[in-house]
Length: 74
Image 1 (cartoon, rainbow, N blue to C red):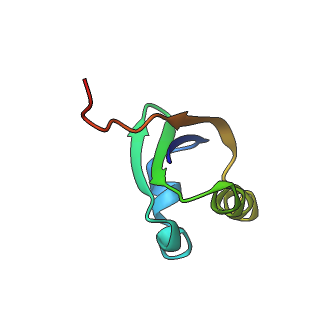
Image 2: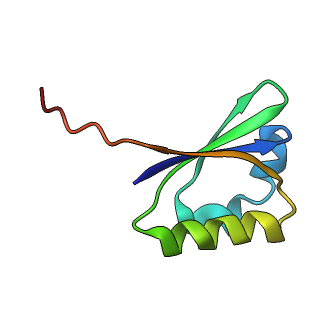
């Protein structure tokens, strides 16, 4: 499942932790004073692990959304 996770702070802060976030194949994009992380996770356990890591890195999550997959069906 694809998730978008909004973090308070600029993308440069997220980039500082790229080595720790690399296991989750996270793509970050700055949106104003915040950063949106996009990542595809296989299950709820992986999502819990990522949120716990963000907490450990002191990256405050302000919003999280599951994005439906687009499979090309009419």
